[in-house]
Image (tube, rainbow, N blue to C red; front, side):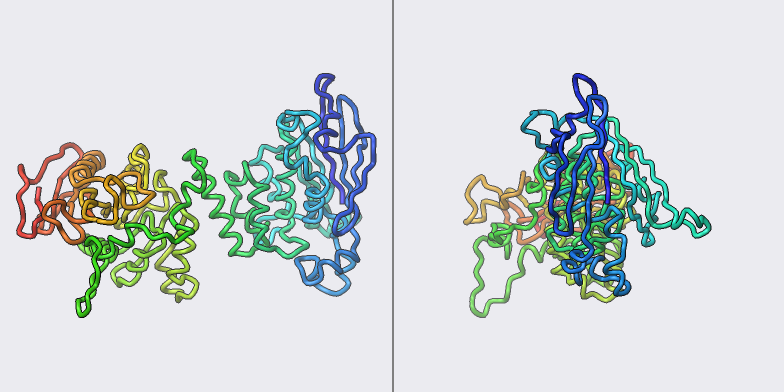
Length: 540
């Protein structure tokens, strides 16, 4: 098994700097022990203008069988003789990837203490692999896959299929390719990390059992390039030997990293929908009944929690607009998704959340893996950021933002407005958010504090109404605002709900607190003044 790395240089930046980058002296032949054989590093040429380092891996087939029995490709041969007669010693595969990590570990980290700054400089590189297995397995393997994997990373790819036997061309091509990669400006560390990941991907198999820690290895080696690779899903799937649970975890982590980078935030700041400490918050304690510090008395009828009252109000609003296909935006751990699935009128539910942990918790809570095929076809959980337009959100009858907007920084709110009301543009949007005025009724909540540690703001009724009116003016919706939970004559209800609809609104009901009508060219209130209804709400 052979691989060469070549570079060019000048008198000011000699090609022999490759020796410093690899931490291997050009004047020596060095030998390293690996778990399946011996690795040799030597330099066929070493000069100021050109330098080539070669890695030769001498695989011991006997050791491969003994160590890999029952593990991966090397331990599950088609027949007994294949344990000892196979392509493992010759074709670049996961064995070479492991050897790269063993022999060039420091180089892969981008560290060069002897020449500070040298590892950060890109340089011309040419990498040659005489024989690489490129198994398709229905995924378009061979020469085409080599291009799909390496060209998006900036490599110029020259890949040619190796015939089964040059003396008998009619036998056709083998599953092996000769691969040559050329890059004008490439960091050596990046090149080695990419090879470490993509060689097993090309092969489509590994010589060892793929354990959960392989996800961390993939993410570490793919840092800086894998999140934006167009074949990200293919790479994760084949690198992790098609272990779907691990693949899903890797893709969720990659998407989270991409979203965090786009928002210029840390991953932990975004993936915070699930509290690892399971610490109780005011939202889940004092808000349970919608009354401050409410305690159930013997013989007293069991009170309905505020969270359940919110879900009931949301379901009522969705029923009012006749929604059958609903997107729960910021679905968290899936409480509303579960309630929607129990409603026979709802034919499809899309749950979207930026937090991979929340989606995993939702999948467990909903028991997606135990659902019947018909039931599972009604629900889909996907990861996404609501501050970016997403084609997956289009075409739904209604979207729900239940206790979501207050988790965004105010400067990011216009981006969510456009993504939901402007780009996705469902026929109806239901928004719920805390009423800040009601906070004084929580005896356990210190003055001036918000109900949840992650709330970036909380609006009073006038502020929420002003925001809703601005959205209707900007995107051509109408809105009705309603209280949710027990109403206090002074501070209102603990939660406020806005039902946005496209087009002319129906006649307002006594349950409506506010109704604003907007078309594409004009905005006008349905009444000049607000009047108090018998239920204590307002109609505007």
